[in-house]
Image 1 (cartoon, rainbow, N blue to C red):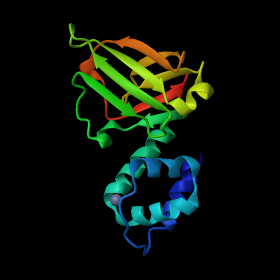
Image 2: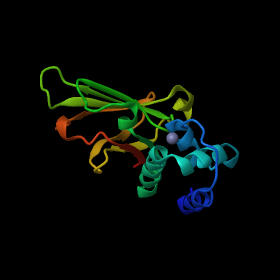
Image 3: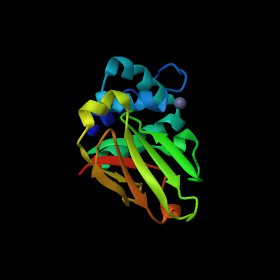
Image 4: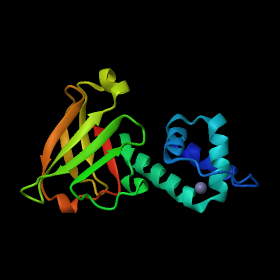
Amino acid sequence: MDTELFRRIWQTHIENHEHGGHPTVSEMYDFLITGNLSDGNSILAHLSRCSVCRAEFHKMLEALKETEALDIALPQLAGTKNIGGFLKIDTEGGKYTIIIQRSLKEKDIGMITVEVAENYREKLEGDAIILEDRKGRKLLEGTIVNGQVSQKVRDLENIDIQRFKIRRR
Ligand SMILES: [Zn+2]
């Protein structure tokens, strides 16, 4: 994906568009990944008027630029503020679900699972992946078997849950 191209396209569309409803995060993400301009035009038009969505769009853009991410998750957009006992978040590309479960006995230890969505099971089986938080802390590293990877994680409180990134190992 050529992110510079998107930046340019976006900048040229900043003028005089009708204000529509907010696109969903998934719609913006799809547009970023596929570059489909027939759907993208209405999104670009909206971004030109809406600073809230524009900020989110740029956040995604930056997240995708940082690495050759396979997928990203932005839990704060789903309204998740802290981990609590359980966090479950679908990635924006819809390929994975990230699940964090806190141990009942030891509060700072938990289990992290990356689950592959039903539609991608066959395709992604056997992939070696790495899950990182926003600060680049490696939370999980493993091979997808039977549609998932799990790993014990320590220091749960210090996971930066504002953004997760899944990349190839
Ligand atoms: Zn908006």
